[in-house]
Image 1 (tube, rainbow, N blue to C red):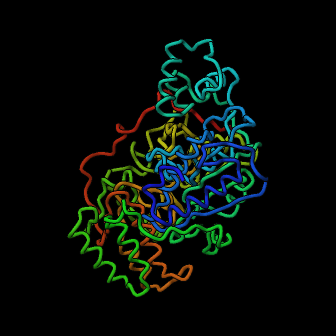
Image 2 (cartoon, one colour):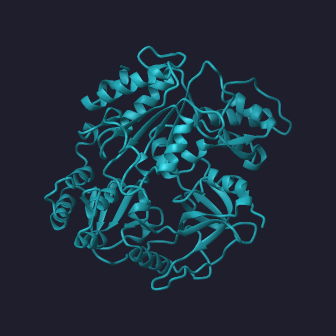
Image 3 (spheres, rainbow, N blue to C red):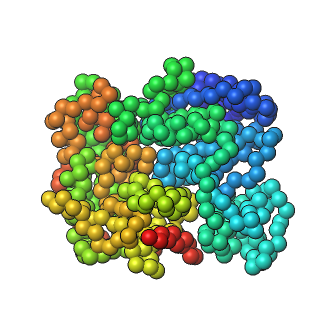
Length: 507
């Protein structure tokens, strides 16, 4: 076992050894650090499952480092060099940009599932630069790119490992070097999928077509995907293929948020008892806050988590009101949630452009202002590796007691958005924020209804998912009140790209 295993718990160590054996079948020997031809072409799917704090991410990161040390090529999704027979490949995936960014902040080069299903097509001239940056070619001479620009690109890539980012630093726009997107034709070798509890059956089948060796990391206590009948894709795997992590890893052992999450497993625990636990934790530890109101300043970047749509719409309306946002337009800095893409089939390429730039359903964005053309918006896609984009947008602002949303402006077709200052707990899965506000009156209503899901009271599943979205601090909001903002909405803290990519859609 590699040296990284010295910090493993017993169940992590056992999972590591069983995964290492599966990887040997794929031609990757972690113990010896060697790459060999795969033993066979059989499909291998395994799952590492465990609740929050059980060490899934630590294990994933350690396996990634061991694979990289063994010489495996990590495929990021922003560029892929020519395939070599003597090499093995690894892609680390998450269902959303935000989930992928959580891994990237921990040093793991994750990308979204969509960016692996569809690969970028580079202009042949600039592909030479990409090959050189990736270490597979000679330093090129490109008309219009000076030696200083190439040096700048190389310095950026050596630190950030992003081809598009390096080319942007050299002064290029995305439309200069990426000419389109195509469905992946050649399979890869190994895929790691984080937050796999969010996968639906179609995504799972797509991934199995690409990866002969697939490793899922998931939390069985999360909410199952909509239309999945309460089940997750790893539920039907044979028991031998499921590696369960039971104990809370010692690095998280003193985390009061995780203590609360694990307390929900007690079948005798009632809602009022759980709230007393939260109130007691708040008296002992500043990482838990017994909140008498919703803090509006936090809503701009981390949405309030609710169960009911009616609550979500009321909070959004209140957020916009206290910021003086007019009905007829958006204010710079307002948060939005991508609700899908409205394009006819003939615009399939434009759909791929939008999705590849991170505008997939559930993506969180910040409105930066109107684009250069009517109906376009300048957007910052939260968690995306290349976050700045200008896209044809249809923005829908829902209002209490009104069936149809108000649309302050819209392109004829493009990416559709709802307001993002409050979201349902279901949509929050896969994301994490430094501070998370959970609207407790909604959880109480769920407890009063007595509904169950997958054999567990629904309120407990909702509470578990909601509180484990908090990276550092949990705000358990017990009153239907909203604070006043301490200042206007802001965008100055967001990295601004020199020229955002314009994604135009013609009727």
